[in-house]
Image 1 (cartoon, helix red, strand yellow):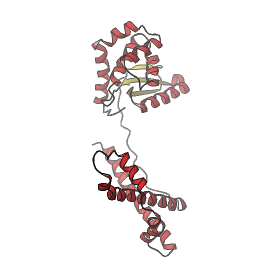
Image 2 (image 1 turned 60 degrees about the vertical axis):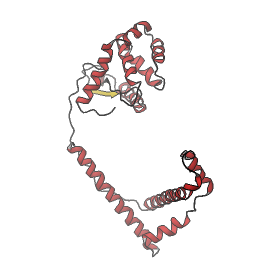
Image 3 (image 1 turned 180 degrees about the horizontal axis):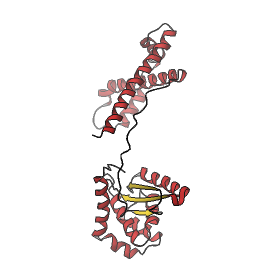
Image 4 (image 1 turned 90 degrees about the vertical axis):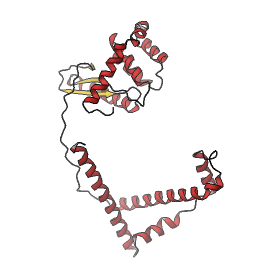
Length: 260
């Protein structure tokens, strides 16, 4: 593992311990004002006020988890009641402690580690670009057309490009994830669009309709952005297009890209 990742994990562990210590101290101070222990205060203000789950709540849980075909309600009634009680206790305790913390603000002096910037020289030659490659800022995105977060990120990058104009360049590289079965095909489509000078037009269209990416849908989008559909369909059968997308994916993995 990278040293930077280990430092981050260590910081998270330290912060978790610190959070627990702060929580216990705030609870102790609040209890002390009423001449109680922390456990006594929680019992009085939280646990004693929690009602037992009723039949409607238990039946709703039973139905929501599709247990009807597996076990009779009577057989698991008590277990569900215990589980719902535990959930109520946890939620009520968290809400009570959150209120105590709001009334007793805490300033942390534990600072996150100053991690070294790991420099990677990214090859931008094969990516689809927007802007001047000599711009002082170059944004390289490894993206997936079925990824909802990628769609949002794409919009954000477009805002940056619009705001800074010639000062920024955008490079798009394909990184279709295995969990998204139509992402590769969508990438193939945009590479075919690139051959007709319509990459960004189809790129935007696909992100706008990323829930509908059948072959018919992609051909329809190609027509909508003004492409020659017959040439598009011929291109989609070209193994070189598949290789082009695979090259981006393999390259990204080779430089340590693990996700979009």
